[in-house]
Image 1 (tube, rainbow, N blue to C red):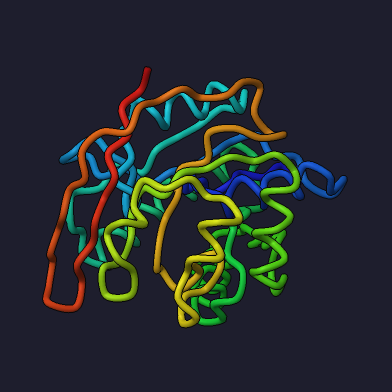
Image 2: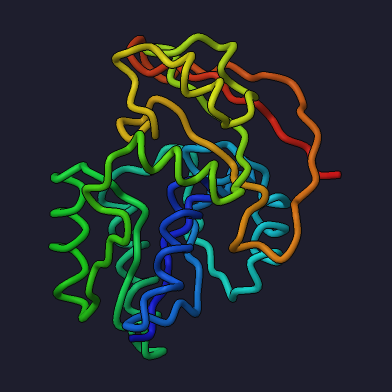
Length: 224
């Protein structure tokens, strides 16, 4: 089945893509990434578009972006996504893959929005233990760095850290090992799905407060 992957640039996407590549039922031919067009950065992760482009090149796949304003409302997001998916369907795509793990409401939302457009939602790492997924990610040789942390649950010192066993061990007990509840986001820069390692330097840390309950620290990465 001709498949596009909803690519976030992070660890869950990378590991899900790895597993999907070993499933003969699907053929991934495109990546789709939401981008904050106002700042030229990947939505939620705050990653520079230039690093996304290097990542795509290292994956060797075609790619498209969903260009969005800084804080799009749900109606704008859904209309933009619907048009993008409609275009992909016209190109023969029949499946959309995601790196989601256990958020039932999110899976149901994706399935309900895609089904009327003739697209099947696929979840390669669904319901896997998040601790086991992190162990597998590291064991397979993937490498990632934390680019965003939710300051409501994690200290800013976690931003910019390497995603390794020490990082997982330092996480508070209430934080999911994969950050599946939005506790942190990552940039995957090496591993078995990449042709080469993506080189970068750590830049400054940037703090953003959208509401009193939504405060984040972003670790800016600069391509080398």
